[in-house]
Length: 314
Image 1 (tube, rainbow, N blue to C red):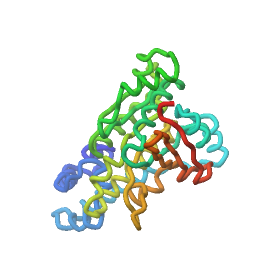
Image 2 (image 1 turned 30 degrees about the vertical axis):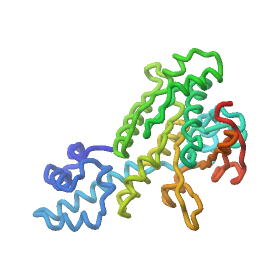
Image 3 (image 1 turned 180 degrees about the vertical axis):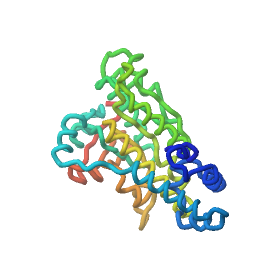
């Protein structure tokens, strides 16, 4: 989001004095402002020599945020036309999984794949990347948070999919290592800027964004029980959904599992995150015969509880 010091030209209240006040509380962007407790911030402003002007500045930033986040109303027919014309279904590369979820990953939606360590989440992500890059002639952005990206596995999947040139498919998969939530925000904003101009220079369309794993970035900031971690988590989810909807890309993220009440396993990141994904799938693996299982936890058009079996290498 915009730096605070870039707003003064159009909003004189947000002058150097207001910038200094914000910087003294580690607020440098509008995004930083969103993470603050506004009651505390107003109390801090009252302690300054220009308290009234500072509080007016705080209200000015809130008005800017409200204006920039206001979305125009759309009717049902407009949503239907958008879905039919722009929100295509992209094959995952697994016939059984595609059949389970209505053909594959849908552009405009955020799909979450949850599972234990070694359940096959990363292997599915790599297969999806190879499938979309090969079958849909588009770019895939792979955000790697755990050093999990394996070009060798991509090559293995490409050899299985077809005899297409490996170089062309691999060049359509852009891998970006990201190891903390703030770096992720930086990358997502760069992606947003790039998506607004995609196709203008003859570049291939970005069809998918994969984050493996998003829980590795979010879990460290949730400690302590403060509101900032949950605010960052929600902001990340909203931004991913915004990119998916506005630029017609399929977003896939992975999440680990933790022990819940009674020792039962459940997806990590808690109730606040639960409402973010459009689709939630849980993957497990039978180690004896290397068969994987995927079950629908949440889907806008498929019944929860439906499941399929598959082998990652098939």
